[in-house]
Length: 102
Image 1 (tube, one colour):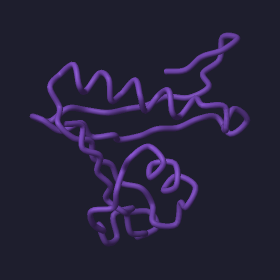
Image 2 (cartoon, rainbow, N blue to C red):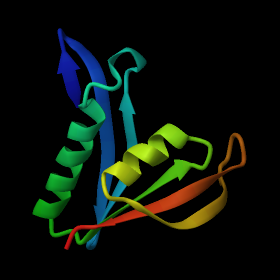
Image 3 (tube, one colour):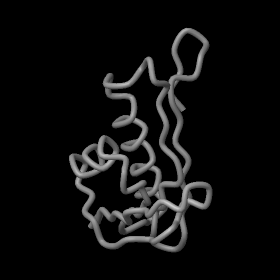
């Protein structure tokens, strides 16, 4: 979690399954974006995953979320597949992305 002046600026949610770190959610308050918070949250999650012996990171991102896709690509993630209709409320597809840690 990222905080300043007693308020939450962003948070990340991830879990480890065997040797995989799965990023479930990474969110930054709209007014605090483009200040490196998301990068620090992602780096912290990856560091915690490494400590638990993970070899790679997986995540899904909406195929329409170009800003998030560019962010993850800039942090070493690559496209490895599509999850059709992944988001139940909109039936949008998700891009599955992976980053190897080895």
